[in-house]
Image 1 (cartoon, rainbow, N blue to C red):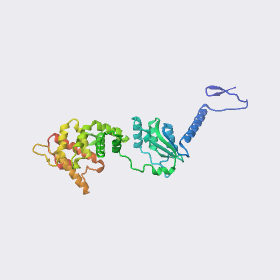
Image 2 (cartoon, rainbow, N blue to C red; image 1 turned 180 degrees about the vertical axis):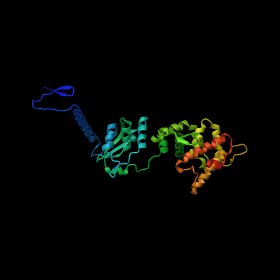
Image 3 (tube, helix red, strand yellow; image 1 turned 90 degrees about the horizontal axis):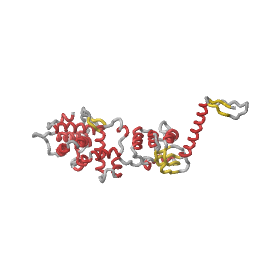
Image 4 (cartoon, rainbow, N blue to C red; image 1 turned 90 degrees about the vertical axis):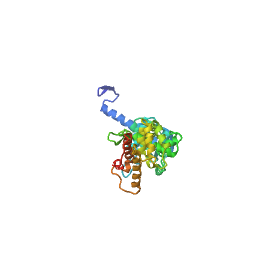
Length: 338
């Protein structure tokens, strides 16, 4: 006896009274559901445990990452046991994976005895978004109360990570912080035709976050300039501002001597300009003192100054001062402030 499924003829050994009606599509769906149930059971066995186990290096596939996020993670509503996912953090992890800068030793994923993920949701989400398997440090069977102690200690800052990793060479903590701030600002800012500053790769790098290698790359590209300003930093650091230094660093490569001249006149309190010399460095220094005074005394600030965008403010003002300096023109404080 033969029974027809769609266009196929399949031999069946059945009694004459038996009637079988199994559509071909239904058969496929049944097999697919059975496989899904088996897969889910395997995932349950892997990630749910009443005993504490540390697997160390363990590969997580995108499908396993999806399971952890769907079945083992609650980050919304009144029953939330985890933070909301932050897109920028997830994108940062994707970038690390794509650039080959991923270290499983620093990527913890922890699941408690209730089958809830208590650490590593951004890591797991990054693996899912990346679409490829990645190694993590997996622990299961953790005590639920352990979530109270996760991410409670002081986090290492980016300058500290750069220093401790040796990527900046033999530098002090203060110098590492200075290199980070200036190199990051140089990386982030370019001058627009109207004199404003815009973030470099605004839709890409700022959205993804800047990783350590981006800072190191920026520093390596501008090391001579960054090191020069650090080695000649003034005793009174009122003009030693990140926005000012970033503008000077970007100019340093195509006009080294002119930039040095401007910087040394700016940090020299006795330089006033005049007598055939532009007073722009002195006026920029005076503006720095004026802004500092207004901030300390909680006075009304200039209309275009906001603490949130202070770096951009000083970057723009430095560009204006440099333009006057190049043209050997004088400039007024009022003109620079408005």
